[in-house]
Amino acid sequence: MRPELGDSETLALYAGSEAVFTSGRHWLHPLFDLEGFLASSPVDPAGAVLLDRITGRAAAFLVARLGLRDLRTGLLSRRAIPVLEAHGITYQCRELVDKVACATEDLLADVRDPEAAWAVLQERRARALAKEAP
Image 1: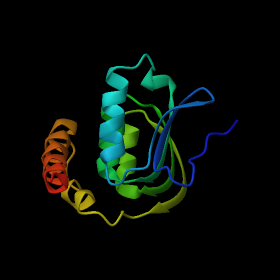
Image 2: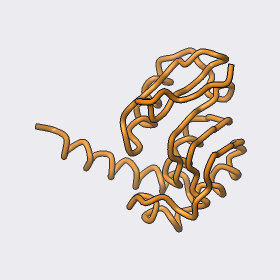
Image 3: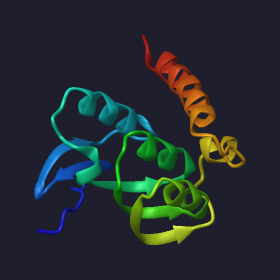
């Protein structure tokens, strides 16, 4: 079975032929949620396959941080490729673009250090969550 995203899914993690985690959220929220899932799951991220709709540079840093090694994405930013390759992540994409239309992509354009990227992403996530709060 070839894993695929459902119509309402933006991200899915497959362990073998089984989807063990799915999300329909947007931006980087599915990857942050996946981090929480993996922290309490026996799933080995290095042996799993991640399906993502859109993978930019920020997502690539998070994918690497999670220890994932196999990424299949619909849309891949060229800015993400150096991050993926530096962390030994194999990838396939349907469409390759110079960059994704996201402010986070631009913020991380010159960042090389994964920890520096993580700090930027945590700050942006906190701001996004604060906007969602009632």
